[in-house]
Length: 173
Image 1 (tube, rainbow, N blue to C red):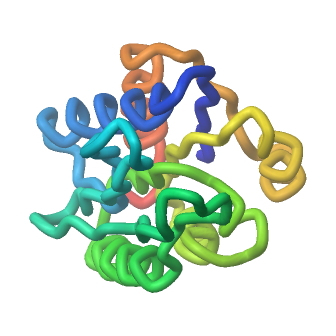
Image 2 (image 1 turned 180 degrees about the horizontal axis):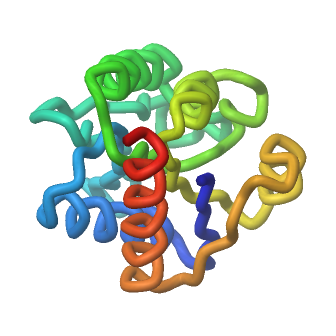
């Protein structure tokens, strides 16, 4: 019930998760979650990171501009927590699938979307996320053998999500 993708290349996992989520939503699956869209604005600046909330029109900026010479983490924790709240509300309203753009450092540290992922799994709602290659070991410790590594392919990801959502629906009936 916990599927994840890993991809090499800047933004590849974001695009995979987004493409799968948009296809599944168009097919009628009720989704809770968020997908990340990176906006390139200036070659001299790092991109802006936005989370598009799948249950409605909200877009939440999760990056902050720390200046051209900064080397620290650009994640805006307040933006991330706002997105988490919107996703938690959508999950509570009912969903066939939870899509989390990324299981990253915040989730490894017990914050970010981690509580929402746990809520979904306890409620029998399957979860799809992306994990960077550098975070796979920590994610696998968190998942305790429950996670399925999915191919780097939108068709395969969607097939897994459909199967998991159908199985969860049948279990609730």
